[in-house]
Image 1 (cartoon, rainbow, N blue to C red):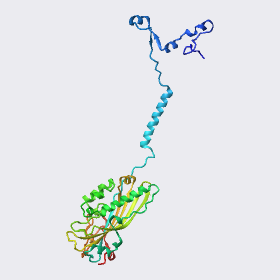
Image 2 (cartoon, rainbow, N blue to C red):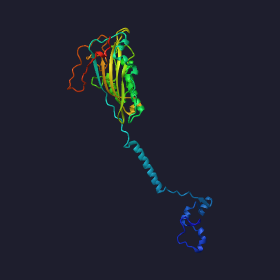
Image 3 (cartoon, one colour):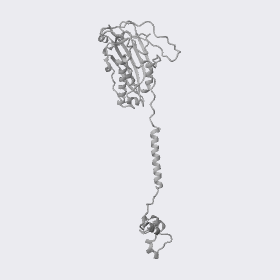
Image 4 (cartoon, rainbow, N blue to C red):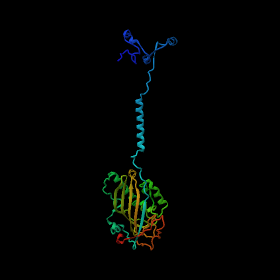
Length: 355
């Protein structure tokens, strides 16, 4: 190895030992001179500028080594790949499926004779199958919730609670029952079903897709009014997982209303009107987070009603003392498309109060 006095690039070519050894410390080659931090001014510069004999040279700029450049390039490529994979990686969760249109069926139940009535609504309930039903939202009982393979306990509870809220708003809210409000029900629906919901009320049609009575319970306010605000309810709620991203809730409830003619006095005779609703709800993870539901199926039986009555927009119950008129729904052409087959049932005598 060279000593402290050796030039940066070693001993100059042709240098040898002997007498010159003692001058090794003062022999400078070109590389040594270039590496020096101090540079002597020329004689002309010293005369012209009266400058000191030497000046400090700026440090040599050394470029980045090839290894550093390669490392920086690899980091940039890895960072860009991570961003791309985060946005469009092959394991990204699939987009939520759009909700199916609601399919609905509303079946009127015609009485076999005159509708029984009484001024005392408590007596009507006590002498009917609804005697043991609970009142209002208390009749919509929550089952014991259990987590599924892909949904937690809290998510199952959220689905059941949302379904219960829909039942309360669509079948127990007095403003909804009288046909004066739809917003409480609309707020609980998946946004992608709102067009079908709005069309059902703007342009109702008996096509199994656009009947307001498939979405909620509403009476013709010019015909009947509530005689008792304590509506009787009984039924069940059940939740089940259909796939890794979907929960379904089935609600099967019977609602019993005490009604009397619109504008009649409190002492006028009242009668009972029964609505059996089987609703099928579907929830994806966005619905659970937003406390909304996809209503995909609605099957309704309601009576006493006349088979000839149009149940598309509102229910027009037969009240105390009234009987079903002769005739039924208009004939249905099974070869025609775009319309639902008209249905009508018979209301069992055992479903009416014994007065």
